[in-house]
Amino acid sequence: MARIKLKKLEEYLQGVDGFEKPKVLLEQYATPSHIASCMMYNIQTKFDDIENKFVADLGSGCGMLSIASFLLGASFTVGFEVDSDAIEIFRANITEMELPVIDCVQCNLVENFNLDKWNNAFDTVVMNPPFGTKRNAGMDMHFLKTAVSLSNNSVYSLHKTSTREFISKKVKEWNIQGEVVAELRYNIDSMYKFHKKSSVDIEVDFWKFDTKYKNI
Image (cartoon, rainbow, N blue to C red; front, side, top):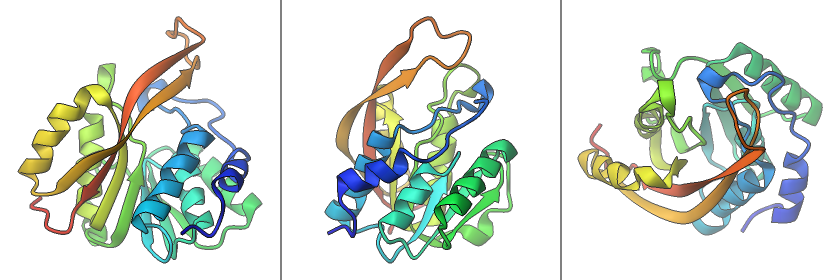
């Protein structure tokens, strides 16, 4: 069960302000409201992993998934984001929508070693990590490893379908359970100078990871 209908959730998320000047090196693409709403709605209705849970949103950007978690009844949500400009928009969105139980922590999820205090602190971790293209190769796996460390129960994440075999190997290495619960077409509109097309569809897997017995 969810305390809000899917259509209404998407309507709320359509009002979330996105990046004003997206930064290519950080692979800043806002999660589309229809994908964010479906992703978070299914996490709650199929797995009961949002309502009354402590939720972390890694690479939280302007707060799309964090806000969705609040609307679905999370007890508390913490966003983790490296970019101060994104955090400013994140906090403006929270203020405008009057959301009291969301916070955001500025940190580099790859290089910051001060995350130990957050290990196992969250019931659920959600994220739409950088896919790790060009200069950021492997970034998605850095995010996933951090997510597993912070979670005491479940991680939900989006990854390029082309990485499915590699992720499956890591799942075994880390002694966690992982399954692809949906296959998506992720549409990215032209945002940067190097984009040759007005938009492009990317094949993306929506993963669920069970972290209760992890070895990481």
